[in-house]
Every structure is written in C-alpha cells, then in structure tokens.
Amino acid sequence: MERIEFCGGIGAGKSTCAALLAERWSLPLVGERFESIPYWQLYYQDPARYALEKDLSFLLSHVDTLRAAAAPNLVCDFALFQTVAYSAIVGDAADTAAVDAVYRQMTVRLGQPALVILLRCDTSIQLDRIRKRGRAPEQKITADYLQRLDRAIDEQIDKLPNTVSVIEWDTSRGSPSRLLEQPAIQAVIDRWSDARSFSDII
Image 1 (tube, helix red, strand yellow):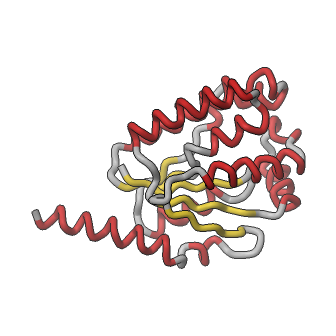
Image 2 (image 1 turned 120 degrees about the vertical axis):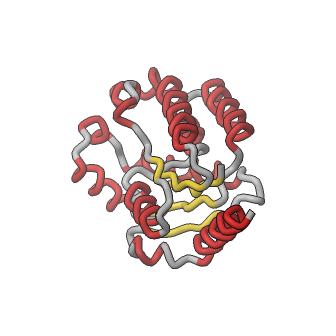
C-alpha cells in the first residue's frame, strides 16, 4: 500500500486539499472518521483525562480505514504520525510513549507514506475556520493549542525516515489548486501510473 498523507493543524485545510488531489488523479480518498470516535468530544471537555484514549482510538481508526480501502495507491486526509504529535502536547510521557509504540508497529505493518504534505496556516485563519465549521467541542481550541500542535508536528516530521518525501504548503497564502502543481506530487503520481501500466502489460 502506497499513500500520500496530509498533516497540519486543525483547520489548516487537510480534508479540502486531500479531496482535490484525489479527484484530480482519480485516486481513492481515505478520510478521517472523527465523528465515529467517542473520545474526541470527551477529550475537549477534559484533555488530560481522555488524551490517551482519544489518541489511540484515532490512530487505530486510521489504520482500520487504510486496511478497509484495499487499494494500492491512496490519498489520506490524515497522517498516522500526527496522533503522536497530539499526544505530545497533552499526554504525559508514558502515554506518549504508548501511542508512539503503537504508531511504530502500525508502520511496520502498513509501511511509511510515499509522500507527506504538511499544510501550514496562520493561526488566526485556523481559528476562524474552526468557528465557522461549527463543531461544538472544537470551539474551546485556542491559538496556543494550535501553535503547540504545529511544533509537535514539526518534531514528528523530523523523525520520519529520509525515504519519505515531505513538502510544505501554506493554505493561508497559496490556493489548494496551486498545491497540486508541486513537482513532488507529480513525481509520486507518475511513479504510481508507471507501476499500473507495467502491471497491465504483464
């Protein structure tokens, strides 16, 4: 299974950009099923109490959706490693170690992504998007939380193997359609297309 994963802060535009990329090249889109995870609402009520349960639930849900897709090439509006970033900003060291251990075991089974697209966004714009989409539990999110999440994501990016390509895009300054023109994305798509063509021949 080869995949493109999107990461970035809440409201950075992961779902929008992932959907555009998947549509542009007719690839299966695997979306985050946050509404099916009970702990995500409890987490915003009491982050310290429910961080471990929420993070493990999200991670395993992501793994489940990847397996269920059963396609050789995928676009994901989430990144598996971002769950570890969430844990690092709220959970204690033992909780984060537990989430990281599960994440690493899942990458052994599923492999690393072919490409990670890191979306940046001005914090004020993220907060405005969060307010406008109207998910009640998320209305408690603060600028400080988003900034700490960005730093934790960067730390996880730095830990990715050198074989994983990473590109950055600022959704507060560049349009999603321009993102699709990035050479690193085209290189992955071309490689996938060449692999499909070869399998058709044999």
